[in-house]
Amino acid sequence: MIKRVRELDSKALIASRSFRDYVEKQETEINRGISSLCILSIIIQAGEDGSHGYQILKDLSDQTNDMLVIVEGTLYPILRKLESDGIIESKKEETGRKRKFYYITEYGEKIYYYLSGFFSKLTEAIAPLFDVKVNLKQDKYLYCPMCANKIDLSNEELRFCDVCGHNIEKELNTRG
Image 1 (cartoon, rainbow, N blue to C red):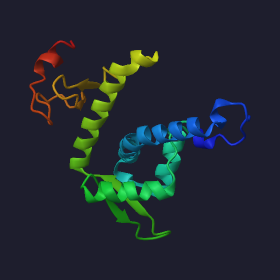
Image 2: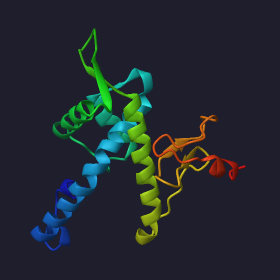
Image 3: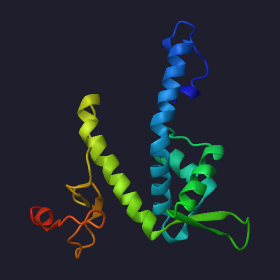
Image 4: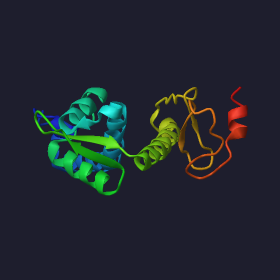
C-alpha cells in the first residue's frame, strides 16, 4: 500500500526512508501469506469455469478495493507453486487466446477451507487488538473447535471434521 504513495510532502513521516523501508517490508511479510489464500478464494469462486491469470488479478483487485494488488510477476510463481503442490490444476484453452485456466483440486479445497478457517479465527481473535470488529458467517460455516477448519454447513451429513477428525455433532446440535 505504501508503495503507491507517489507525491510526498517532504515533512511527512512517510517521506522518511527508515519509516518507509520498515513499513514496506512489513507490508510484504503480511501480504506474502495472505496472497495465496486470496488467490485460492478467487479460483474457488470461479467454480467449474476456472479462472485465468488476468481475471484472477482483476477479481483480486476489485474484491479487495485495490488493497491487495498482486503484479503478474508475483502471481504466476504463486500459481506454479500451488500447482506443483497439487492444490490447483491448470488447463490450456483449446481455442481463442490460448489462456491457461486454473481450477481448485479436491485436495486444494480442503487446504483452502482449513487455511481460511485458521485465518478467519485468527483475525477474529486479534481484532480487539486493532479495534476492529469481525463478523464471521456463523450461519454458513462451523469452525472446528479443535483445528479451526472452516466447515460448510450446507453438507448436512457431515459429522466429523475432515481435517482433524473431531466429532462436530455436539457443535451442530447446539446451533439449533
